[in-house]
Structures are given as C-alpha cells and as structure tokens.
Image 1: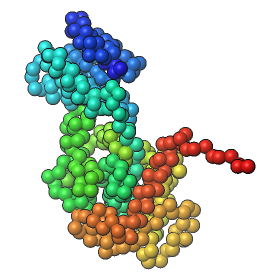
Image 2: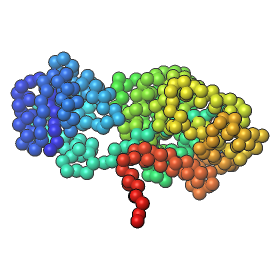
Image 3: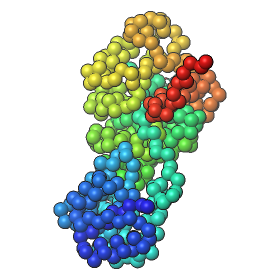
Length: 395
Ligand SMILES: Nc1ncnc2c1ncn2[C@@H]1O[C@H](COP(=O)(O)OP(=O)(O)O)[C@@H](O)[C@H]1O
Ligand SMILES: [Mg+2]
C-alpha cells in the first residue's frame, strides 16, 4: 500500500484528503506544518507527498526544496503542490522548487487521484507495479595531463561506447567551461543550451535539467559548456557540482571531460569521481604534469585505486618508450590506445565520433574495451555481495 503524506494546516482539508485517499486505498500520514512534513518524510519515506504552499514554520516551497536537496542520490519522491492562488508565477515557483505537479484549490477528487496515479507510475512506486532499476550513478572523469593529449576524444567516445555497446544510460558533461570542445567534436551549434542556462534558475530540478541537456544521435545526453569565456565566468562551481550530483541520480554514467586547470571545480570533480582516467602521451611535459597531478591528488587524499593512467597514441614515435614512461612514473598504464591520426582527425572534422560513425575501426574497438573495463569495475563494486560464493574443494 502506498503511503501518502498530506501536508496542510487546515483541519477540514486534512479530513477531506484523508477520507478521499483512504477510500482509494492509500495509507495516509498528516502533517500540519513544514517542519513536521520534513520529519515525517525522513521517518516514514512516503511514496508521494501532497504539499500545501502556505504552511506555518516552513512554507511548501522551502519543504520541496529541502526534500530535493536531501534526497539526491536516494531516489525521487513525487510531490504535488496544492496552491490556493491561481497565478502562473506561483505554479512556476512550485515547479522550480521541485514539485512534479500542482493542483489549484478547490480541486475535484477524481482529478487528484488521476494525477497521483500518473506520478506514481512514472516514478515506479505504483502498487504492484514493476520498479525500474535504479541508475548506477557512476561518475567517470577524463583528465588530460596537458592540452591535445586526447582527453576530449576519449571522454566522448567512451561515453558513446558505454551507451551503444553496454546499453547504459549516459550523460556526457563538458566541464571545460571556457574552451569546451564538444560542440565542435559533435557538430552542434551555439544555439544549443549549456550549463550557464542553469545558473539563473533558483533551484535545480529534473525538468530544468531535461530542458538543458542535448540528446546526441548516438543516444548519449550532453551537458554542453558555454559558448564563450565570458559566459563561462557566470558558472558557479558549487552550482555545477550540485548539477553533477543530480545527474548521478538520473544516469548510469556521468562522464566528465575535466578542465586541465586544477581549480576548485576540477579538483572537486576529481575528488567525487568513482574513476579518474588521466590521459597522457609519452613525452616529457606529460610525464612532469602527471607527476604533479598525482601529487595534487595524493594531497587531497584521493584513493589511488580509483586512478587509471591512459597512454594515448601509445605507438606514436616520441623518443620515450612505454617502458621508459612507466618506470619514470613508477606505475603501469591501465589503458593503451593506439595512434590513428586519420580516424581521429576525420571524426573531429566531420563532427561524427568514430565509435558512432566507424564502430569497426580498431580505434573504436579499443575504446569499447575501455568502456567494458569501466563497466566491469562498476558492476563488481555494486554487487560484491551477490557474487556466488566460491565453491569449496570437490571430493
Ligand atoms: N588515439 C589517437 N590517435 C590519433 N590522434 C588522436 C588520438 N586521440 C586524439 N587524437 C587527436 O589529438 C587531437 C587532440 O585531441 P583532444 O581530444 O582535443 O585532446 P584534449 O582534449 O586532451 O586537448 C585531436 O586532433 C584528436 O583528433
Ligand atoms: Mg579537450
């Protein structure tokens, strides 16, 4: 039986809703103010909330905002705002605060029940309905040891491979705010929305995110960087971090192309990522930068197990062999990607990533292997308890 939390300070509204909902087979909890609503939400985990706007102590908008902020990563409780005012601004404010729907009082009980059923089936908490698998929510960062090593190329193609070959739900984020390249690599114009369009909104909710993400032909969703450096300056770091955590509740993978500059934003992304792939080529400045980056990550207490070294263009002649690079860094490369300049550059020039346009090219196949390794690690980490127990010696 689905638990419904009714939040309203008027006794007659409480009584009416209680009656209607019980008749329809719901279990009902009642709160008369915003604080009590938050307490019951935490203690009882209701399957849906009917939330009046004008409440004592904490109003309905504040309650919705708090719930949305606190539930990040845990799921999504559908909220229907009950508003007395008919003004459009009120509705918009309610939706921005995190409500999924609204009803203007007085409403017909059939309409209320229909809206509730719609939301419950959409969010998978319907009576006896099958629950959708929760998103894996893995964040994978690609960080280039210096410009031009292929971090963007690998981030984009790994994102496509994870979706295409492993059927994962993937969002690709260009966090290179000032000089993001994804519009070029993916042939998208400056008219497409970017992360800066989120900054003006008072709160981040799923509808807002959906209106800003861009769906690529490959099926991967994109959060693009702003179109100019000036616009990039408007993007607040903590806002972008909040967007990333929200995206993790919606996708199996959040793939982030990280800015080379180790500022607060990129450090926070690296710090929160489940895996960081440091992309480099075998040359002296990369060796120096990788050492510095490893040192910076050690300082913030980054778990070395989450770090993967990727040698891109591994067979290109640079005068430094793979072995020499590995011994200089005192580590081995988890991934080596071959040099295929024609495939890489023509993909870039046509705006069609090679894993999408040429899935059989050797370079694409190597990226698919990388995607499989990423996914295998995710699955192993998510389900250690579900691995079959090792069989004992047979006799
Ligand atoms: N494995 C590869 N083989 C050949 N060229 C590559 C490879 N990976 C990337 N490139 C090329 O290197 C250049 C820089 O790549 P890019 O992804 O923009 O690097 P970064 O994001 O690290 O600055 C691009 O022209 C790209 O086509
Ligand atoms: Mg780049």
